[in-house]
Image (cartoon, rainbow, N blue to C red; front, side):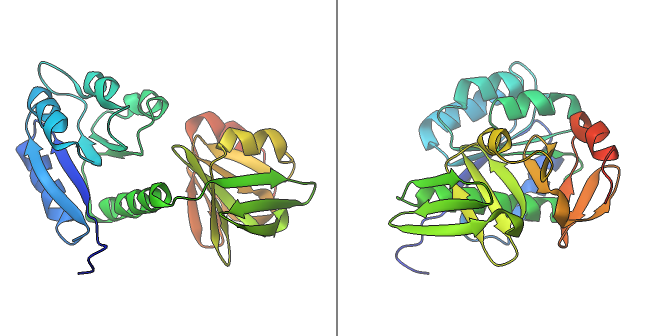
Length: 239
């Protein structure tokens, strides 16, 4: 292990012993995550959070005494990454408004946890970079500043863009780019004929769409979720 290796410290809070066990089991293959404790109620978890100062919390919603949403409001400015793990889809919108990094519906599966681990790693890597990422939108290009370097990217090369809390990831076939601009910043400036918002966290290039489904869009082998709010506009697409 490199001396530069700094693990992501996490705790999990859930009143279900089986769900805590599932999180522990599915996180075991990832040595760059450091387990700092599992807690069966929000009060214990909050106390641990104050002491441990974790980088990541896996958080259930329905718990006795203090529920997960109340705890989320208390710690959201203190914890860099929060992943909600719950049986209740109705809290998803509020969760994203409170800047959760991911929202997992139970039952938790190994493949779903793998997706979350990828998302956490990508976001954490972005936060660790010292350079500020800036972007300038021109008629057919984006100029992306990465530290002292500038990259000119044709808008036609973009497959999709993904919001990741304070950052937006621009995905192309060759490379992904990161900016400090919000996804709203992009959607206010990109042509609505060329780019379509399909989810709170995703917008796709219409020309890159290969397949339309009710709950997802396939772009260059990537599966992009379609949020309920955006399904009517997606249904009107012709590819």
